[in-house]
Length: 237
Image (cartoon, rainbow, N blue to C red):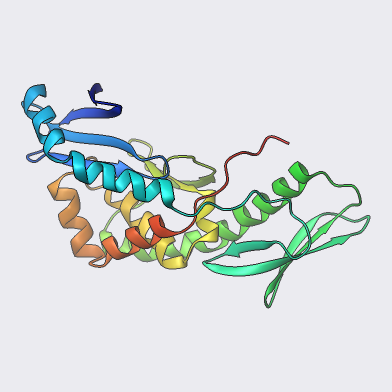
């Protein structure tokens, strides 16, 4: 990985076996990456980046101004999201095994008295994890059939900078826990994105052709996902 700097903007450059140069600005912090053909010299890449500087700053400003979720305390009447819908939290304190239930417009959290905020978060995250794991197998089966690939395994974990990842050698897909809060279409887009990596490792023209073929509206789902509020990341209680 090579790093170039344009003023206070740092750009990670990766040289790949691709034909065209690709520039990306990534949520939530506006990190900038460039994928460039292996034989392209660094001065040419720098000139390309300079010509895109105005666009880069515009994208970074948009991410900076994007809504962030308020810090959650897991209290009564607090807003939480599930599959793109907003629910109010109802907290019930009883001396019984903790659990979370969905009931119409409410998420009901059953916890023991004096449960800490951090423990409440862990209970909610585990519920999100289990709900994701209920729907992912069917989504995988659907798109594996359409794309003509097979993932050996999948997992769910909290990721700060990616919605998903794919270990191509192991054929294992990882999906961000935060996708439980997003619309199902957004989850499907990430699943398709990662499955396509089993056909093409890099984000090159071939990869984009596959995405256009299998999910023609993938850009709409990508933009929808990146418009939604980002998770509050300060969980030090």
